[in-house]
Length: 207
Image 1 (cartoon, rainbow, N blue to C red):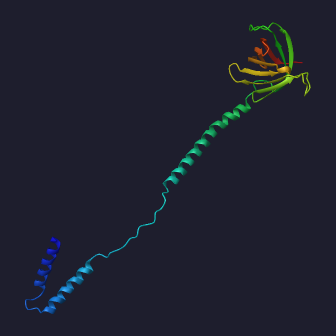
Image 2 (cartoon, rainbow, N blue to C red; image 1 turned 60 degrees about the vertical axis):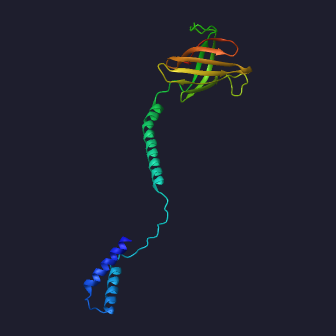
């Protein structure tokens, strides 16, 4: 080993300089052990560092907290922008009278025209809530088997449009589709499941 050989020559050289030629065997041994002791004292201490126990990563938890915080902030921001629009809709003027008696004129010829009262007249008691309407015949009592039910909605627009359905005795079903032509006044067409069709107008009764 080159390092061992070099160490041996170094030791020999040091002993030749340290000891006199007439040095005794005991003196040479003492000098050798003195050098070896000094060499061990100069060596750095050997330390043992046991491995640290494995700790779970905390990064995914931090990322989850950040994502939840961002999502909550976005939801709060969207809600803040939507609240004024919702309150504005609540304060807006209803598209139709909320509780009123309505009169319907209709005919049995689908041509987009309604002359006078047409072929007949029907009075409805209609309630409107959040642009959804429901009603029944104005002259019928609750639970009357001959009563007709009305349900539908009106949508905002220029002009607003309406769509509703009439259910009557013996399976009668009639659909109405129209638009608002004046305040509290609708006009359009109707079809039923018995092959009939025609035009209609629906307006609030005035006394």
